[in-house]
Length: 149
Image (cartoon, rainbow, N blue to C red; front, top):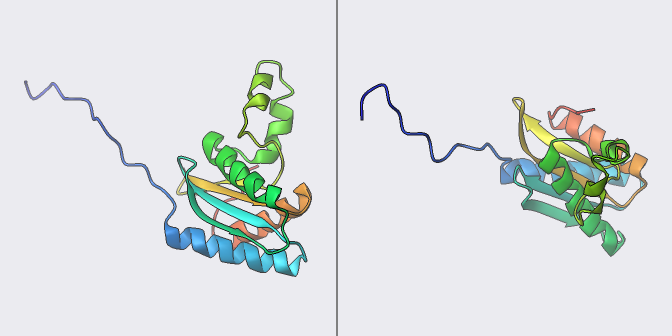
């Protein structure tokens, strides 16, 4: 093999949220949700949508636990906030995605970006979509994560 020929890379480094950052997000959500007087489930995934940290308040409906995980998965998967999906699935070319069992087109899920790279997803569920989003906004801002539109 000559110096001008290169073997293509077989792997790449993929930044991911650390456990410490995920736990800090969980704790921040707990604080904000308590101040807002709502009980929530919170899920943090890595960039591949795999669960890194999770917490469910005692009085949170058990369905909210699965919804929180799916919100985090959806946000990390497409690098979009979950509230944007309602308008996206209105497009007939995208509408079939609405039938995907994990796609959660409800507010409260946000991708987690660090230095412009998606490192995970945050999903909050238990309040109304607006309450979940409000808590997420406060937490993302406090923890130094950008808030995507």
